[in-house]
Image 1 (cartoon, rainbow, N blue to C red):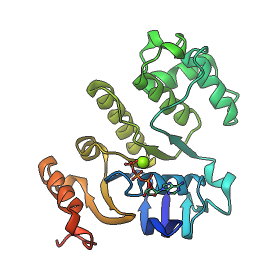
Image 2 (cartoon, rainbow, N blue to C red):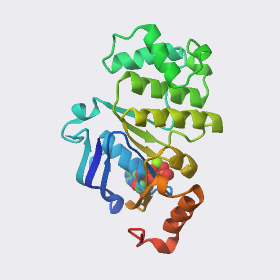
Image 3 (cartoon, rainbow, N blue to C red):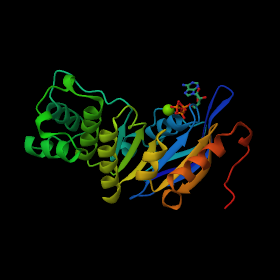
Length: 244
Ligand SMILES: Nc1ncnc2c1ncn2[C@@H]1O[C@H](COP(=O)(O)OP(=O)(O)OP(=O)(O)O)[C@@H](O)[C@H]1O
Ligand SMILES: [Mg+2]
């Protein structure tokens, strides 16, 4: 579970995140939408322990990220916008390296290959050097590493950006599968369409505040976009909840 209670971050005099209360339960995927600078990455970085909260708490699987940095990360996987791999190693060798770092040295090559296939990497690519991979292929190695770590909780910061429609579709399917297997997933994205496809709930952020949370099954794509644009209007700064 991912949980924020009154979580805030101030840089200088500016609130990057203001009193966030949020729960992402196991089996749920929450997508955070919001303009550039709305506080999405700040939120994720607070859950990762990369930033210290100015006030409030960030909890991962019941552990306070700030007080228990190691315990909170044990079952946590982070997938950034750009997954960095060693270019001279194959996809399989990269996965072997990252899973060993995460403490899993017991996987056979066949098992590691299965994780890569489940993440959607074409079998022919598994033994190729990662330096020849496209962005989507690198993202898939990141997903495989998260699965091999047996992560139950996922933080994703714009994992879909720059993926072609087919790769984004495959990535979305993988995320839905992880959700159905019981993972708790928090994903920052600018892609309203994909957010609607994969998320249980959509959170809308504006100027450091979570201004709305919407059950993604309750609205169509066009309605969702209309609600988003309404929140992002310059004069809608004081909107804190949707009237419904
Ligand atoms: N290290 C920092 N020092 C000072 N200000 C920061 C720092 N990190 C973020 N901010 C500020 O906090 C606010 C929120 O930034 P954040 O990166 O969380 O936005 P975001 O929603 O992820 O935006 P984007 O969609 O562009 O990725 C912005 O005003 C940003 O300038
Ligand atoms: Mg960001």
